[in-house]
Length: 317
Image 1 (cartoon, rainbow, N blue to C red):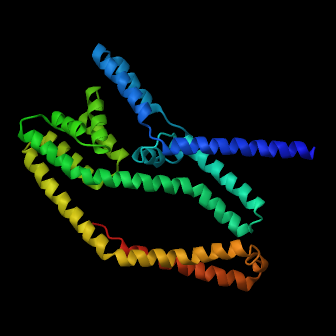
Image 2 (image 1 turned 180 degrees about the horizontal axis):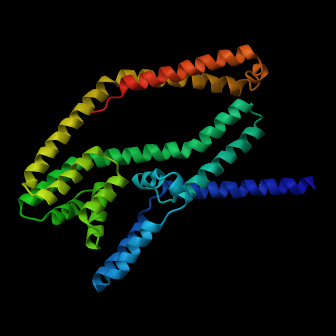
Image 3 (image 1 turned 90 degrees about the vertical axis):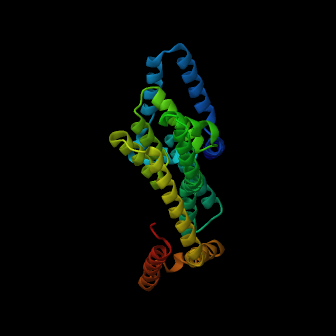
């Protein structure tokens, strides 16, 4: 009987590893293939003039979701920003599978309970942290391209093109991600969505204050009229000044950020090293009231200290 249990356990391990590799492949790969298929279908529909089918495709894409979308509504937007071709359900399944694999490794290496918990937490949160980093890089690239996109739209308007054609110039002439996002906006407008709604959808996919200013300028000009070129030129100058100020603040706070990283990481690194070298180091005294008090007070002071350091090195501009 014990042999059968052992075979079952090893079989589950093999299946888990295969699922992790599949999830890692999907996590690291781009979702461009699905987008190309959808765009190809929309182009074919555009040739035939069957707008009803186009609306069905757009509605289907809006309905795609899962239980995790309602519980964690920002996950899908984060996956889109990171350009990761994976559903929220698959992402959570991959994270949980990685966490269970970490538990199995912890038991086989005879780690202490603290080290196992730390390994489990790292394995569970690791994919999310990776996703945040990848999304942040792409969002930063989008923000860097936004000023150039506004200038391009302004020059298109000066040349006599309507706003929709000027935005289409951005999708044709600028690289990913902003070119792809404006291209999606143009597709949504061509297939029946209002321009303000399409622009709001882009702001939901790429949260950015400067982009919201741009959308507000377009919306106000549409309702009240006025010289849109002048509005966009002023907005472009304001965004440039804000970005210059952010870079100055980032440079001035570099020393504080480095200190925060070193001071914040050192206690956790030492705690992990000691737990790995001697798994029973903390477990031996875990029931001692003095040990509990001695570990609780530094933990509280550590959290308060990191909070104040965060407040000192982060400025809202």
